[in-house]
Image 1 (cartoon, rainbow, N blue to C red):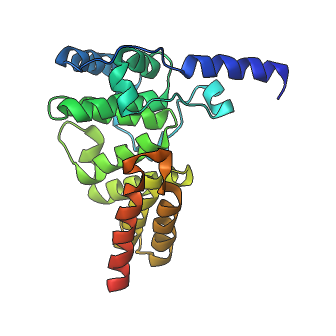
Image 2 (image 1 turned 180 degrees about the vertical axis):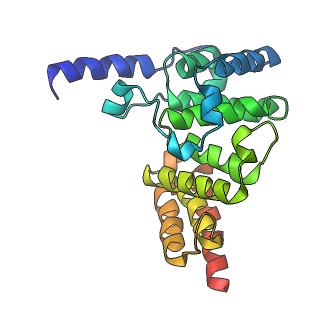
Length: 235
């Protein structure tokens, strides 16, 4: 790595690491602030009206794209450092932080702030976070809502959109993306049924997710994928 790239890499890594903060309880004021901040992100309305498969990674800052760097944000770290996490999403264009903010909203008050979590996942996807893309696709597939502009799209177009989105997330190594694409290919969503592709994607979900991040939920995509494989065998 050249000295110039090394300096840039150091800068972006430093910016991606959250400042330690005291664990905080998420309040309605926190969620309201997140809703206001994400809704104010330039272009969010356009993103919400477009298939995210067509905007995936389109807003990734070039430094993050160059070094493939995302912040270390997850549900727990974002909950404990919520202000920093929200700043990382809305000020530093960190897709991992945007996904984590959406997860915090989902875990605390999904009903009242449903649009905010959908916007958070949409922004995360546009910033190149594959897991955010999968979650956005799951919203469009499983949780049609009047508050979600793109979910009102024609059913066939919507199926094509979320299947392409799962496929893109799977290509980027997201286990849930592979599991969801496998299910979509099994069912013939977004195109003809393709059992061969379905089996490949479902097996890939297990390859990626086994022991992922050492979390108890790491194997969840594989459990889902194995159930899909059982359904294929039963037929």
